[in-house]
Length: 290
Length: 162
Image (tube, rainbow over all chains, first blue to last red; front, top):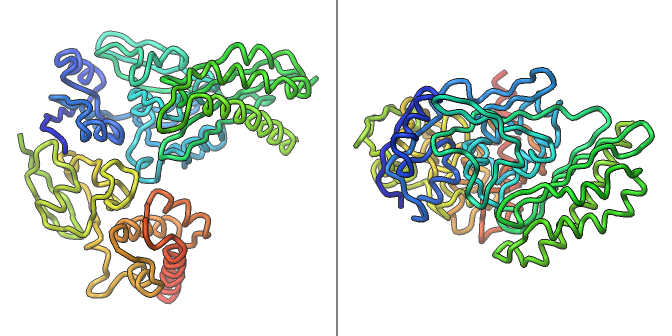
């Protein structure tokens, strides 16, 4: 049962930011509502005002500009799943979107809403970290760019200021000699563990860049530089032999907690399994393209 | 504070007054009296409350009616064509695609959304589309079969019209 609230419907980002500044913690941005309304129905959070941002034009576009895919924060998961530009430029991202929740949630839920709600058992944040994404935040007087790694502070908590809105997600196109994979595992509606891997290599098959991120297992998604350091500078074969170690490190870094989605040590183990599979998947994609 | 909205509901224009916090599911069931749409989990996972909003399947348990001004909504009560059952309804009956029936309205509306978008889905595509609609008694084999049969019937009718 939802308790009473007022619905504000600003038509610009500046107006929405001004409403946030005016009403503070008694208000919250409302986009797809698939997570916010759910938490409000359960009585976990209450607001006097919801600020519906869906009337703000121009925040639901997907564009390619100078090798960067720009995604408006109000773009729904469903339109990202079906977006031809995304399919061509960032297939791993489209695939991740296709496997979020169910069709109905994807129709309503937005990428920006998903990130801002910062529910720990969510997919996009983890993948955005390995893709080197930047998140654009805006308020009445200023705009700024936030690296995906900096965005999440804790469970349900981001680094956005009280009157800031997330407006756009910018993802650089994946280089030609690079591969990306996002894998998840879970047996409830939400994933227990998510893992993102980005690998770039040179003509001599040396890994020039490795990015590993883990999510869902702990309070927030995070990069694991120590695992990345093990893989970087190695050939594919050398790196394969180090995956067990890299997975153990990533498992510990996941900061896994025991909950309905699994015990902490179980989630840690799954992180290692997913890292190996993600690595194999990238190599398979690479050989099928060659 | 109530807001008057104008929506097309199963082909008819209605103009209810709704408070901001009224969910579409509650508007349909408690105020308009269309109780075909069911509440299952109330959290967007089970699909029992599926309706079509501007042709797209949504969880009516997680949609605010206050922002639906101008929307086109189709519920299970609007699925039949004239006085005849829709081929999807007919196929569910024929194939035994229902047992207790609680999930059935949601299954039918989700199937309608799928077949509107993809008139000739593979079995895998049907299972993927219905993966978020939970049935706890009949199992899914007959439901999938019903969607396949409905798809075939709809394609036959479409071809006959051309």
